[in-house]
Image 1 (cartoon, one colour):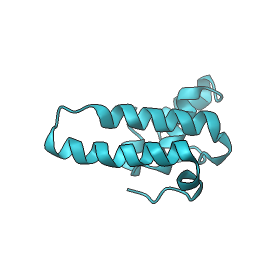
Image 2 (cartoon, helix red, strand yellow):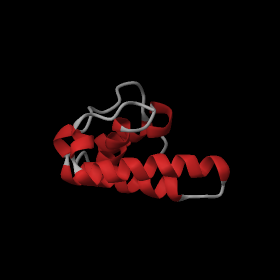
Image 3 (cartoon, rainbow, N blue to C red):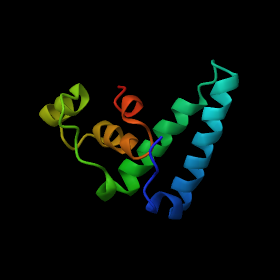
Length: 98
């Protein structure tokens, strides 16, 4: 897991969602059918995309099909901003999942 940027620890909603995400990952280890981790990832990415858009990383530059598709169709799409936001708190292999 990447270390989230400092602003995510000072934003109350980011901090709360990060804590919930850690708890959800622990729960997944004991219950593989638990889907809370995905829901919390979406909520955190949505929050980052909507409230902290200036902090989003640059698009992937190495053949990321999601980035290429969104840049071609609609670079202002909220789902693309959420895709970018996931890189702030997930390892790249998880952040790139559609």
